Image 1 (cartoon, rainbow, N blue to C red):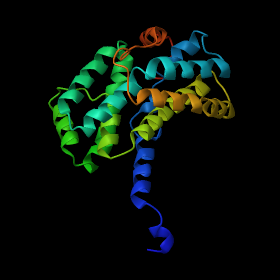
Image 2 (cartoon, helix red, strand yellow):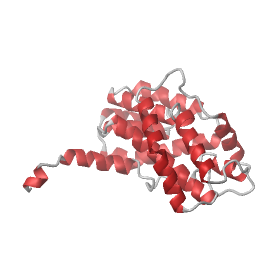
Image 3 (cartoon, rainbow, N blue to C red):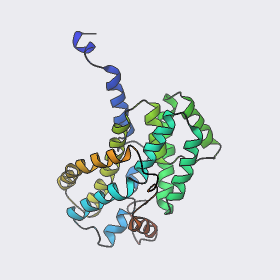
Image 4 (spheres, helix red, strand yellow):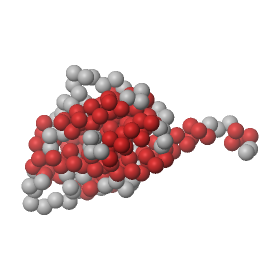
Length: 239
């Protein structure tokens, strides 16, 4: 090892790499197959250009994910750090109840189970092993935000960085799908992403200690469009 190698915190770099992999949009868990109701918004003409797509993603960050998936990532992270399996089981039940649209509910637990399948064999902690046992016994569904928070804590990743990575992944997914559906240029999509980084940062800060009062609050229009999606005449996405 050279002197320059010794000046670098290899363990921190390794953890950063794990976080990048955990939030990688290209992970083979099927996330690219889901639009989260966006396809319905586009077909109905509610989202038709870069400005309306940016507004939609901004709204999801501040009025939906902040109180739903992002909050559950944060709470699952806390429960995992505390090795509190009963709290994770309760969170799993709460997430399932909060996702009223069938497609959104099925999407979430399918992504979560696949994510756990990738990382769990490399994480030997009681909380991950215990949650896997609950999943095998079908006492939990393994929703995506819960699994994301569980794994991040088990991997000893920074909580704020974990939330930022989660939101970034969600934003990139919506923008990518919007670019295809509207359609827009790839450059337009990148400009939207750049303009939303400050919003992502504010949402992360607000998610560090989720409001129990607002937990599960959602944008009703998104749930309705997600329910309507399964009856669209043509569909590119599964949700």
